[in-house]
Length: 464
Image 1: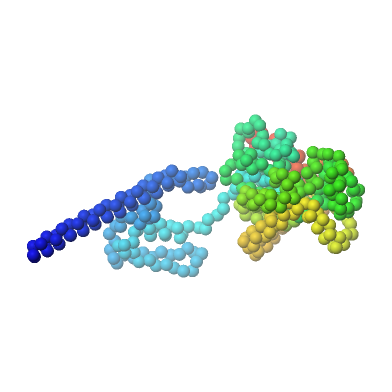
Image 2: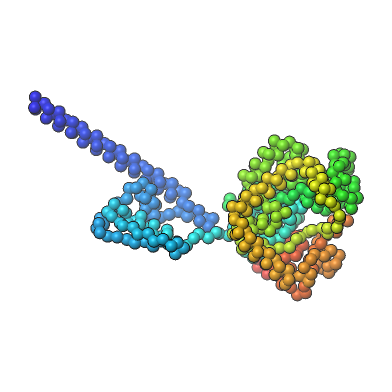
């Protein structure tokens, strides 16, 4: 009986040893598979640095894999050995870590290196799609972009006419394909994501919007010569008169290729079907799509705040966003009561429901971004921006306020496009100013032509 018991115990022990060996074998095999897969992923995809893929060396991969899996060869360390690591100088705490035989020196070394690194800084963006919508202060934004392009030798995609990409047709990538890949799109275009997305994969996407009443005051005056429906009222009549009969005026006026300016033209510029601008479900879908694509939508009515956020997004110095109002019409002083103004606003928004919804959404989005950015930080950057704008105005301009084009010298006046019957303003430069001042106030078409000339010379000439 005793022999049977001993024999049973022996068999059980052997089986237990076999099971333990099998378990350890499977554990080692599983861990090996995990390690192999981690190594494959890291060596295949690497990581993105400065727009390029960087692939780690094999020994670097092994260190990370071992840390992730917990399977690190632990060297023998005397129990009494201690290592003291100081926290970064930006903090007031000091961490003391006692290293035992159970703690790998590789992990401790890595931690020490990480805590002593300076805080990360942003990398200036080179690639951007800026959808230049109409009458949304987009010429001022374009001026900033073109000045940056000259400074950093960034290439701007050139329209065939150096002004717009066959607007009002949707954007199509110019043919023949450009030999050197461009960094920037910033001229008038009707949005076409599939085509614009041919720019670099790391491009930043930006657009502009404007409050509807302010927008259509400008639109109706500026595009009056090319939109017959706008000419159904006199230039000095209040625009409320037009919106009281908007539907009738649009239906009974002579047709024009630019009739889309009569109703929700921001919605049109964003590439959506104008015939469905009153379809609220479709408009809401459109806004959701735009929200997915654009990193930032600027609001002309809060231009300076928008520039601070754009400076932060692009990692461009805030002083480079100092600019002046360009391509603006002369405002006629009219005594309009607050009651009439609000009544007109309601009529404009009702006729342009799609534009009103677009503005409301992205205006709210802008202020959420401002809140996230921080109000104190925003005020600090606004002060720098406005101080730089004031400095440039004093050093560059003969008069700080804009003047009618007719009062400029003939050379400066000739570079501006002025629609028939529209009084536009510009800035009068001091004599013998430098190129920075000249570019600050230069007309859009003239400046574009200069930039494209520099690109074609491969930046071999210097703007003068």
